Amino acid sequence: MNKFLDPVRYYSYFRARSIRRRLAKVGDSSVFDPLSTILEPELVSIGDRVFIGERAHISAEMTIGDNVMFGPRPIIIGGDHYFGVRGRSVRTLRPLGRENSRPIHIESEAWFGAAVVILAGVTVGMGAVVGAGSVVSKSIPPFVIAVGNPCRPIKRIFSDANLVEHLCSLGSERQTALNLLVRRQHEIEAAGLVVDELPIVDQTGSYTNCENHVYHASDNAMHKSVWRRQWR
Ligand SMILES: CC(C)(COP(=O)(O)OP(=O)(O)OC[C@H]1O[C@@H](n2cnc3c(N)ncnc32)[C@H](O)[C@@H]1OP(=O)(O)O)[C@@H](O)C(=O)NCCC(=O)NCCS
Figure (tube, rainbow, N blue to C red):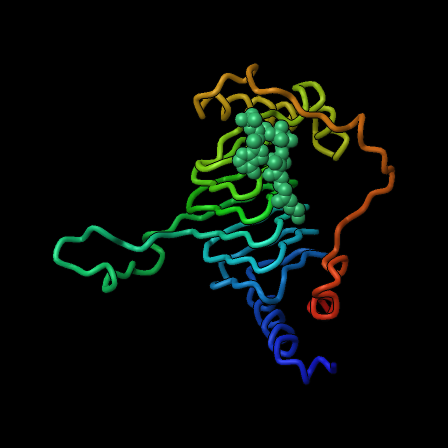
């Protein structure tokens, strides 16, 4: 069917272009499903090569670093309604501007499984992996796997030495890498966990594909034509 005769595709095409033009920033090769909802795109800054899966809902002031991946149906909410005001129905309460909102920061290289919920004020550290269905209500340290509701770190990604080596091979200065390592330790402890008790995950030995592949939305056949047009 011609895309202009198909109401869903017609709507998606113009909706995606309109959202994209309003985003505070969007980097190279970053894509989102046109049927997503981004309520105030002016408050959303997206880095390079970011992939946001199907039907995202973003209602937040937020920054997303480079090379971040979201699985399908992430829900990102940066504020709350008022409630518990004596003598007032909850339905009549409305924050003034963004007084009840806090910005969300997603650092580079983070990966989110399907259907995560991310709440106001959190920072998800560089390279963190957040399990499917998790509710992120507190900040997540860099380079950990975190799961559940509330989402909590369960493993570290890379030993300390291998994390530093990994960051340096991606182009970080050694001191910057060391600082991130210290930050990981500090934030794991701040979450009430013992660093050495979190197992280490390192898939280097089992990953055999030598080619670098950057996922593009056109990999997804369902939205292929709409997504491809989105970025012209
Ligand atoms: C988090 C994830 C990456 C697995 O990490 P892992 O290190 O292999 O975790 P394991 O399978 O060893 O599980 C460790 C523990 O966490 C639990 N767990 C794993 N994923 C979980 C999740 N999403 N939510 C809650 N608990 C989870 C396991 O049940 C296990 O619990 P136990 O120690 O009590 O037995 C994976 O479970 C996940 O959520 N993947 C996302 C898949 C997805 O949505 N992909 C989208 C593709 S676009």
